[in-house]
Image 1: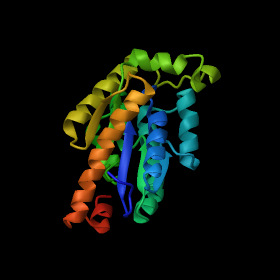
Image 2: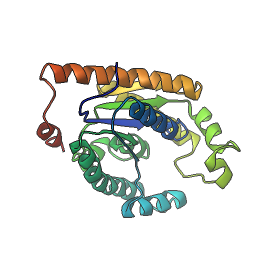
Image 3: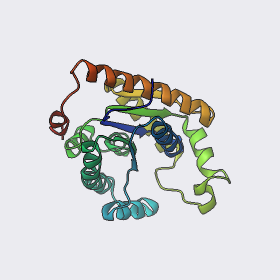
Image 4: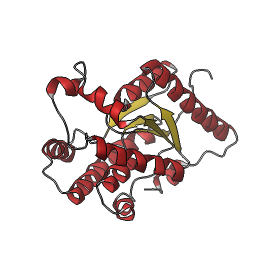
Length: 229
Protein backbone atom coordinates (compact mmCIF):
# COMPACT_ATOMS: atom_id res chain seq x y z
CA UNK A 1 0.00 0.00 0.00
CA UNK A 2 1.38 3.40 -0.96
CA UNK A 3 1.65 6.33 1.41
CA UNK A 4 -1.59 7.95 2.49
CA UNK A 5 -2.96 10.85 0.47
CA UNK A 6 -6.43 10.95 1.97
CA UNK A 7 -8.12 11.65 5.29
CA UNK A 8 -8.06 8.61 7.55
CA UNK A 9 -10.23 8.56 10.64
CA UNK A 10 -9.51 5.44 12.67
CA UNK A 11 -9.30 4.64 16.36
CA UNK A 12 -6.70 1.95 17.13
CA UNK A 13 -6.33 0.64 20.68
CA UNK A 14 -3.49 -1.39 22.17
CA UNK A 15 -4.52 -3.70 24.99
CA UNK A 16 -2.75 -6.26 27.16
CA UNK A 17 -1.56 -6.95 30.67
CA UNK A 18 1.22 -4.90 32.22
CA UNK A 19 4.53 -5.86 30.66
CA UNK A 20 3.03 -6.95 27.33
CA UNK A 21 4.81 -4.14 25.44
CA UNK A 22 1.86 -1.88 24.63
CA UNK A 23 3.78 1.39 24.99
CA UNK A 24 6.70 0.27 22.85
CA UNK A 25 4.52 -1.22 20.13
CA UNK A 26 2.17 1.78 20.05
CA UNK A 27 5.09 4.18 19.59
CA UNK A 28 6.64 2.05 16.84
CA UNK A 29 3.33 1.78 15.03
CA UNK A 30 2.70 5.53 15.26
CA UNK A 31 6.14 6.25 13.80
CA UNK A 32 5.60 3.74 10.98
CA UNK A 33 2.21 5.23 10.11
CA UNK A 34 3.65 8.75 10.04
CA UNK A 35 6.43 7.60 7.73
CA UNK A 36 3.73 6.35 5.39
CA UNK A 37 2.05 9.74 5.28
CA UNK A 38 -0.70 9.37 7.87
CA UNK A 39 -1.40 11.95 10.54
CA UNK A 40 -1.33 10.22 13.91
CA UNK A 41 -2.27 11.19 17.44
CA UNK A 42 -0.58 8.92 20.02
CA UNK A 43 -2.14 8.84 23.47
CA UNK A 44 -2.70 6.63 26.50
CA UNK A 45 -4.88 5.88 29.51
CA UNK A 46 -4.84 6.83 32.31
CA UNK A 47 -4.17 10.28 30.89
CA UNK A 48 -1.93 13.01 32.21
CA UNK A 49 -4.97 15.10 33.07
CA UNK A 50 -6.26 15.98 36.53
CA UNK A 51 -8.30 12.79 36.98
CA UNK A 52 -5.61 10.62 35.42
CA UNK A 53 -2.98 11.96 37.83
CA UNK A 54 -5.19 11.21 40.82
CA UNK A 55 -5.82 7.75 39.45
CA UNK A 56 -2.13 6.99 38.93
CA UNK A 57 -1.30 8.05 42.47
CA UNK A 58 -4.08 5.87 43.78
CA UNK A 59 -2.93 2.87 41.77
CA UNK A 60 0.60 3.16 43.14
CA UNK A 61 -0.66 3.03 46.73
CA UNK A 62 -3.73 0.78 46.32
CA UNK A 63 -5.80 3.33 48.22
CA UNK A 64 -8.99 3.02 46.15
CA UNK A 65 -11.69 0.39 46.27
CA UNK A 66 -12.16 -1.44 42.94
CA UNK A 67 -15.49 0.30 42.29
CA UNK A 68 -13.90 3.69 42.94
CA UNK A 69 -11.08 2.85 40.54
CA UNK A 70 -13.57 1.84 37.86
CA UNK A 71 -15.48 5.10 38.21
CA UNK A 72 -12.26 7.13 38.08
CA UNK A 73 -11.13 5.28 34.95
CA UNK A 74 -14.48 6.03 33.32
CA UNK A 75 -14.30 9.71 34.34
CA UNK A 76 -10.76 10.03 32.98
CA UNK A 77 -11.87 8.32 29.78
CA UNK A 78 -14.79 10.70 29.40
CA UNK A 79 -12.36 13.64 29.44
CA UNK A 80 -9.95 11.75 27.18
CA UNK A 81 -12.62 11.17 24.55
CA UNK A 82 -13.04 14.89 24.02
CA UNK A 83 -9.42 15.04 22.87
CA UNK A 84 -9.70 11.82 20.86
CA UNK A 85 -12.78 13.08 19.03
CA UNK A 86 -11.10 16.36 18.16
CA UNK A 87 -8.29 14.49 16.43
CA UNK A 88 -10.69 12.14 14.67
CA UNK A 89 -12.68 15.15 13.44
CA UNK A 90 -9.43 16.43 11.90
CA UNK A 91 -8.95 13.16 10.02
CA UNK A 92 -6.15 11.63 12.07
CA UNK A 93 -5.52 8.07 13.13
CA UNK A 94 -5.70 7.88 16.91
CA UNK A 95 -3.47 5.24 18.53
CA UNK A 96 -4.21 4.79 22.21
CA UNK A 97 -2.37 2.65 24.72
CA UNK A 98 -5.37 1.25 26.64
CA UNK A 99 -9.03 2.05 26.18
CA UNK A 100 -12.27 0.98 27.85
CA UNK A 101 -11.46 -2.70 27.20
CA UNK A 102 -8.82 -2.35 29.93
CA UNK A 103 -11.54 -1.46 32.40
CA UNK A 104 -13.61 -4.46 31.36
CA UNK A 105 -10.64 -6.81 31.78
CA UNK A 106 -8.94 -5.39 34.86
CA UNK A 107 -11.93 -4.39 36.94
CA UNK A 108 -13.87 -7.57 36.16
CA UNK A 109 -10.78 -9.54 37.23
CA UNK A 110 -10.94 -7.54 40.47
CA UNK A 111 -14.45 -8.86 41.05
CA UNK A 112 -16.72 -6.15 39.63
CA UNK A 113 -19.75 -7.01 37.50
CA UNK A 114 -18.92 -6.95 33.80
CA UNK A 115 -22.29 -5.54 32.78
CA UNK A 116 -21.96 -2.69 35.28
CA UNK A 117 -18.52 -1.92 33.85
CA UNK A 118 -19.99 -1.86 30.35
CA UNK A 119 -22.75 0.49 31.50
CA UNK A 120 -20.43 3.11 33.03
CA UNK A 121 -18.33 3.05 29.85
CA UNK A 122 -21.26 3.01 27.42
CA UNK A 123 -20.43 6.56 26.28
CA UNK A 124 -17.18 5.33 24.69
CA UNK A 125 -17.42 4.22 21.02
CA UNK A 126 -15.87 0.96 19.91
CA UNK A 127 -12.34 1.13 18.54
CA UNK A 128 -11.98 0.34 14.85
CA UNK A 129 -9.22 -2.11 15.72
CA UNK A 130 -7.98 -3.50 19.03
CA UNK A 131 -4.49 -4.99 19.07
CA UNK A 132 -4.38 -7.32 22.07
CA UNK A 133 -0.78 -8.24 22.89
CA UNK A 134 -0.96 -11.67 24.48
CA UNK A 135 1.81 -12.66 26.86
CA UNK A 136 2.18 -15.06 29.77
CA UNK A 137 2.04 -13.17 33.10
CA UNK A 138 5.32 -14.73 34.22
CA UNK A 139 7.08 -13.31 31.15
CA UNK A 140 5.38 -9.94 31.64
CA UNK A 141 6.48 -9.68 35.26
CA UNK A 142 10.04 -10.59 34.34
CA UNK A 143 10.04 -7.70 31.88
CA UNK A 144 8.61 -5.28 34.43
CA UNK A 145 11.11 -6.15 37.15
CA UNK A 146 14.21 -6.51 34.95
CA UNK A 147 17.09 -4.15 35.83
CA UNK A 148 16.84 -2.43 32.46
CA UNK A 149 13.16 -1.56 32.73
CA UNK A 150 11.94 1.79 34.01
CA UNK A 151 9.79 0.12 36.62
CA UNK A 152 12.69 -2.09 37.67
CA UNK A 153 14.85 0.99 38.19
CA UNK A 154 12.25 2.95 40.13
CA UNK A 155 10.91 -0.14 41.91
CA UNK A 156 7.37 0.84 41.07
CA UNK A 157 5.08 -2.12 41.54
CA UNK A 158 1.45 -1.16 41.05
CA UNK A 159 -0.96 -3.52 42.74
CA UNK A 160 -2.10 -4.73 39.31
CA UNK A 161 1.32 -6.27 38.79
CA UNK A 162 0.72 -9.52 40.64
CA UNK A 163 0.94 -12.80 38.80
CA UNK A 164 -2.31 -14.30 40.05
CA UNK A 165 -4.21 -11.14 39.27
CA UNK A 166 -2.63 -10.79 35.83
CA UNK A 167 -3.59 -14.36 35.02
CA UNK A 168 -7.23 -13.46 35.67
CA UNK A 169 -6.86 -10.31 33.59
CA UNK A 170 -5.39 -12.31 30.71
CA UNK A 171 -8.30 -14.71 30.78
CA UNK A 172 -10.71 -11.76 30.78
CA UNK A 173 -8.96 -10.28 27.75
CA UNK A 174 -9.08 -13.57 25.87
CA UNK A 175 -12.80 -13.78 26.58
CA UNK A 176 -13.24 -10.24 25.21
CA UNK A 177 -11.27 -11.25 22.11
CA UNK A 178 -13.75 -14.06 21.53
CA UNK A 179 -16.66 -11.65 21.98
CA UNK A 180 -15.55 -8.59 19.98
CA UNK A 181 -15.00 -8.80 16.23
CA UNK A 182 -12.58 -5.86 16.29
CA UNK A 183 -10.00 -7.71 18.45
CA UNK A 184 -6.79 -9.01 16.89
CA UNK A 185 -4.74 -11.27 19.17
CA UNK A 186 -1.00 -10.82 18.63
CA UNK A 187 1.41 -13.18 20.45
CA UNK A 188 3.82 -10.84 22.23
CA UNK A 189 6.58 -13.03 23.64
CA UNK A 190 8.84 -12.69 20.61
CA UNK A 191 11.29 -9.90 19.88
CA UNK A 192 10.11 -6.31 19.59
CA UNK A 193 10.69 -6.48 15.83
CA UNK A 194 8.70 -9.72 15.43
CA UNK A 195 5.76 -8.36 17.39
CA UNK A 196 5.81 -5.07 15.49
CA UNK A 197 5.78 -6.92 12.17
CA UNK A 198 2.67 -8.82 13.28
CA UNK A 199 1.06 -5.58 14.47
CA UNK A 200 1.74 -3.82 11.18
CA UNK A 201 0.26 -6.73 9.26
CA UNK A 202 -3.04 -6.42 11.18
CA UNK A 203 -3.13 -2.65 10.86
CA UNK A 204 -2.33 -2.76 7.16
CA UNK A 205 -5.27 -5.10 6.61
CA UNK A 206 -7.58 -2.70 8.46
CA UNK A 207 -6.30 0.28 6.47
CA UNK A 208 -6.80 -1.61 3.21
CA UNK A 209 -10.38 -2.35 4.24
CA UNK A 210 -10.85 1.32 5.07
CA UNK A 211 -9.63 2.31 1.60
CA UNK A 212 -11.99 -0.18 -0.04
CA UNK A 213 -14.89 1.26 1.94
CA UNK A 214 -13.87 4.77 0.95
CA UNK A 215 -13.68 3.93 -2.74
CA UNK A 216 -17.07 2.22 -2.76
CA UNK A 217 -18.71 5.01 -0.81
CA UNK A 218 -19.47 2.71 2.12
CA UNK A 219 -17.29 4.43 4.71
CA UNK A 220 -19.46 5.53 7.62
CA UNK A 221 -20.02 9.25 8.06
CA UNK A 222 -18.41 11.09 10.93
CA UNK A 223 -21.85 11.73 12.38
CA UNK A 224 -22.51 7.99 12.55
CA UNK A 225 -19.21 7.46 14.30
CA UNK A 226 -19.94 10.11 16.90
CA UNK A 227 -23.44 8.70 17.40
CA UNK A 228 -21.83 5.62 18.95
CA UNK A 229 -20.81 7.69 21.94
